[in-house]
Length: 263
Image (cartoon, rainbow, N blue to C red; front, side, top):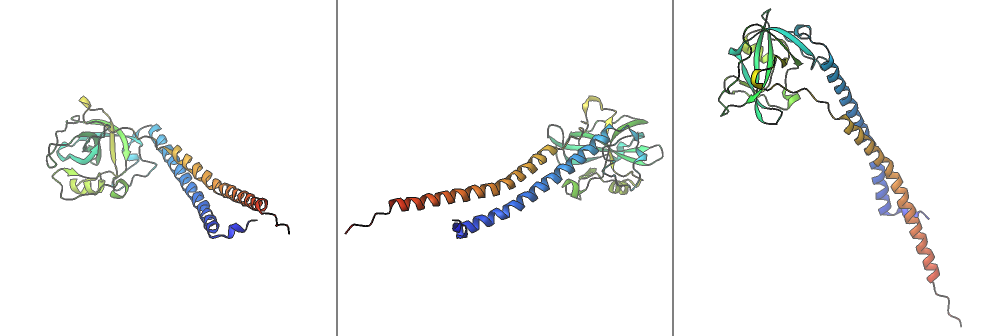
């Protein structure tokens, strides 16, 4: 009755089904892992944004690597902006996906250490080599508030750290490189400024980090597992159909077989 399962066609079909089931299960597990990672990351971001601001030197120091738990923490610092050593970070976009630059201004603390402050986005200059017009920050001593961010790397951002750029232009925000350029003690990471807000809305402050869509990964995981469950069900349906069709064919042959001629 089931001898057709030994045919070449059915052997191949069965092997494909046996390969698809564990593959789909593994893909579902991978998507569920991504869901859990994104959910945990979203919770870290939410906790960091909800935390009360603390002095920046409680969380970072020269040479310190900002951790995932410290990222996005709201911090404050008191000092003055040093616009003489201000640089721009090339090829950054604003909320409208327009390409421009980020303004990175050293902020000299009362103890002489330097905090890198990303003051936000401005349009790029007319040419790649020309330094853009940048509104001045508040003069004199001021208290700034912002989100603590880790140093940027090519591995994390996908941005190549190009060398031999025009004067006062960089590709990545890196406290070690800036410490070497400035000849100063620079706190690890940098500050994404949130206050005081600039006059005239320029530079444009960086937006709040958004939640990653973890629900999509959860849906994909369920989808893969449903597919995995559907493979054996589909295989059984095909086998039963083949058995039924084969049986009907045999009965038809018996019905159509002519009676022997009488002598």
